[in-house]
Length: 381
Image (cartoon, rainbow, N blue to C red; front, side):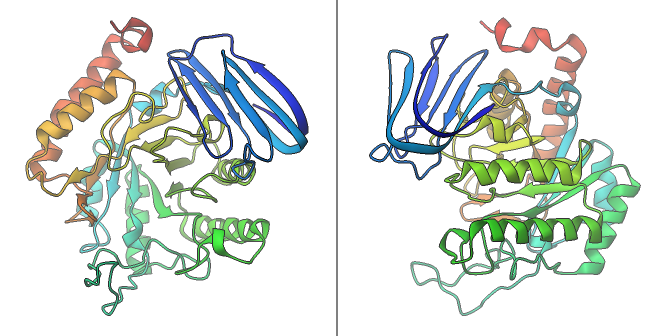
């Protein structure tokens, strides 16, 4: 990845014919991909074409600006190797607003087949407001309890004793444990993007809080529900954030990034610092929006939420597994009592989890046993 500063003119000629490309309507950035990889050309989100003219045609991207463009990223895809060994390790995502922490028995059971335990936002303090109403004037449901937002930049456990128990049990049984956090909120009600505080100061404060969480609770990494600027208007700060996070937790740490942009315009050189990318929230599987293999080469999993109207989700999950493994994606295992977000449930039923442990585990073991090359994109019909 190369960064250009204060650049007025540049011409980038693609030496391949993209099978897929996404041109940003707001800033003229380009993501161009084929089955081997591609190129990401990323200006700041605020650099409109009106202020900094950009064009793409006949496989050539051009910048012709009257004033210098402050910053431009150009990155090759994929920017790193795919971690095959980690891709065969299972990840459990625990999410329940009813039983906010898993029992020791549950954790021990997870440890028999999974290496990473992700904890959803409900491990943080429940601040449910029984007087609150949604946009329709209806009472806010219990699961929408503001636990997904920090309090004056701090993440406060709902029950610190329970949280420490979960961490100790997970570590005693060889699991990495990572809690939900996000970079998108200043406090319980004000977005960073709406804050009068300079963004670099907000960034420093947030990083200090993550350092405190690591030092206080011995977390192994983070489940990031968005980065510093959730809509990626500021690639410079997000790039600095992921590098700082990787330095904080090291090569053995685990970083999951919930990156569910629906338009397919994303930054592989940022995603590459993650172990796992969660994609395609509330959407069906898409070859170019749901995968990371040969793009960022982080492991990728579609967010495997199940619509509430699907009472028996085994066929739903079978299709997801088949699509995922075709493109070297993986599938996060969702568990917890009645965890819900809007019209989707964030847990597998007992029958669904049993199905995943049989069908998904067996399919993945076959890939691991037969060998990687047979299943990579070059060999697909």
